[in-house]
Length: 486
Image (tube, rainbow, N blue to C red; front, side):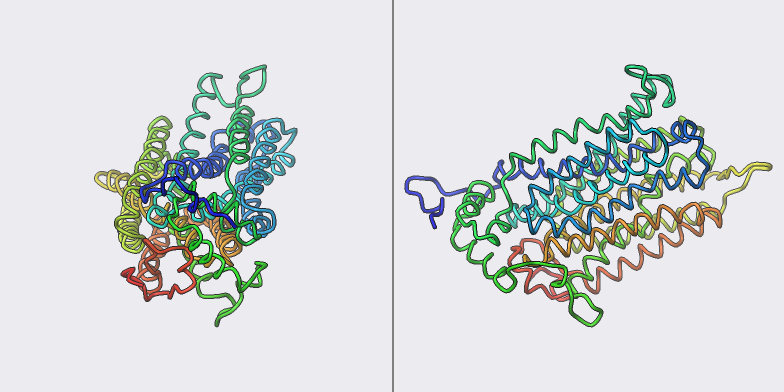
């Protein structure tokens, strides 16, 4: 085996961040952009397609949430496929699914084929949610893995924002989501079809990405792996790194879901850690803010334009929060940031629950009005919640899921954790209307309780992984490496 590091006359790679690894990480994170775009784009189209297909509330809700079912399935199988065929082919498959879903949804004849196309897109979202963090973690140097891994969450929130923005531009230009737009096709259909453009870009970019060096080593392609490690990751001693990776892989040459089994509760403790991180990320109710925010603010007395403006501001704040996280994660560490985030979310959600307890229902309507100062408290608390989530639990869960699992189970364990995350996402989104009928104080009180439980969970069991090599994760002991001193 020849290694690039051994070539005479060539300079050794710098220990500073290699621009090449930034480029390939950004390209991989485009899957996260499509993740955010695809899950949010239906929000601007829902009323128009509901009218066109004469849908009742139940079927409308199912059409909106149907993509989440595909997400769970796509996440579940992405790990197996990426272990067998490689990380890059799965990215191309995800891009193809996004493209097919965009065109199919835009040309749907009725609600049932629309649901099918949305599920197809969900398969792509689920696959992208697994493969992007795994790939980025496997190509990124340990010193910079946190901020590069956070690109996934930044891409997701950018996708959400661009979906909202493109929906607004298309609807405003056409004069409404139900009105005709280009070539006489309804505006809401173009909202879906516009996604085909970034999907095609993602697929083309994926074809030019180098394969994960850890996948290549597992397949015995050592020369290709050494080139990726030298040219992109910037390893100073490629032979040593390859030997470290081989030692973590040699115990199990072929990874499968059976490798996740073990421990007192059926799965290995590290797998449960990933599942619980995923569950808590959703059980604090973050997607209630993004899926129902416009309706929520209208219900407490905002008019439609104020509600839309507030929702847009919230999405911009989420982008700013993610950028802050990228700047801090490799300096402060994962554990401390999660603890601060959990505490901040618990307080802000608790204040929202308290504020809504003062709500008054207007006579003859279902509109809730909040008297001063509680309307201001609710607004500030909701945006504080988004900031605490966006700087901590939003990006850091994806970072941790990409790095906490040992090499030999990473893709499969990440797939299980991501599937659990999508299941929790669906459960929270589907249950919010029923919980809000009981009372918004009750709903946000539950989310505040989960935020408090997440604080206890992180304090007791989540270790610090900052600056640790992926090959060292085999020795990770839950709850014992809180200071990152190994």
